[in-house]
Image (tube, rainbow, N blue to C red; front, side):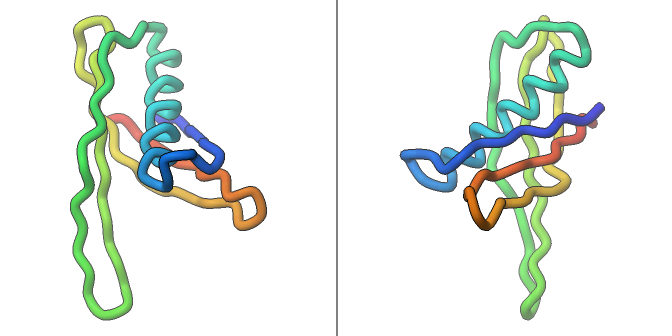
Length: 92
């Protein structure tokens, strides 16, 4: 399953904007499963950098009706005009 979340610029900066977009994407996955969310945890990112290319993986999980849902951020895009951030999250 997959979900897309978005968030306009956040008062607390890019990190808060990204976390909110990920939460919304996880909410979408939970709705697809027909469950309710009881706990959300956003886990940090890991990445490597070589020369000018950057590779990064980010993951999140939440408890949905006492089941853990783990998801990976597969892509993100920031609208250059509105600065709204979109993330595509895929559950594992």
